[in-house]
Length: 540
Image (cartoon, one colour):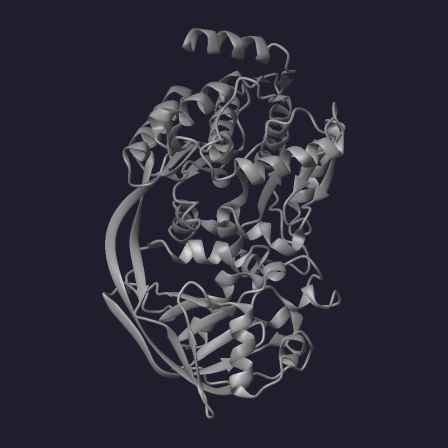
């Protein structure tokens, strides 16, 4: 059977175009396919961190980098240890809200969810006052501060998801979500304000997913990075409440639901709700260590400046059986991106004229658990961030064949987009933005952690305007993947994959990195980007 599969793969690859790089090194996809077949095989058990699948994966990547001829990326090692902690939080009963005229009991998982990032057996909030702080945003560049004049010590912030641009297109970036709209930012800002906790009001359109996603996420244990303070600098309680629960909270507080709309207007003032709550959360805690895999191609004349190509090697491991299959192979997500990382590493290594700048190939862990591997690298960088020119991230290619377009996720952020547009034009392709910018997709893959520390980051996705079948067909294929194979055991490699479009995507990403590697300038963030000031401060 393996021989037949190999023959079919060779026959399929013979139909694909091969692309030559700057000095005629060919990207033909053959290595890409072999890597996907291995990484997405059942033998790798879904590549979940902390399992036998992790050990097989990281050793495979190390060996592949060694065969390519790349140097270890972390001193004498190809690995960077990523210390993590698993916390399984269980709220001790309902969340009881007490007002002046009565009380309201919210059921766990149905009306509210709550966990804690703090590494201790039990945490609690006691008689904490609830304050509605609108979107919970402090954004000087937009002249916006929902916490102005507030002392949040010991209090719980009730905040809305997304940002005011979703309601008023003249605010922030209109219907393109900024980082201020992400739930992670809500928790971070509340901690900076000294709050005891956060309850985010869920609304399906604003969040871009239903309550079932929230419920499922909070019904499982959560992974965090280990920190020196055991996350004591974070809020005690991180949670959500349903929209209906929020409306009932407003009734209890005798305030108008018009506050939801008013929160998106300039001049909004936070409202103390006159409601308190107490909650105990019990935790089961397990510590572990996973690994990022790093390999370096040293530059020539500017070797102390770095371009980082990244992809996440992990997936979901074994889980609930669907149609008798319990291995979540993650072929597209993200064996494809990891295979592309190896293919590009080999392409750069074969260049006769080596790049002036150094290239780091970084395969990160625990993306599926919250972008943890990339967060650890970004906060514990092996190479200086102010000398890191750019990050080019690869996550979930789709085998749709050649397309006339390529998608830049979070379009409008950085000057790297012009590099991508130039490379796409060489292929006769155009660039476009993501299809649902209000969903905040830019903040959902590993490049985002580089953006948070100021490094310009580029994240491309498969285009949909199929050369052979048109745009409607391409959109339908992506929708089918999202509905039927995304995070499911059916995300498996097939010899019927048409990787001709992926080959073009790899060529485009090579061209961007190759151009950057031979320049002396540093690309920047565009005016209006929430990451621009961070970079400018770091580069001074």
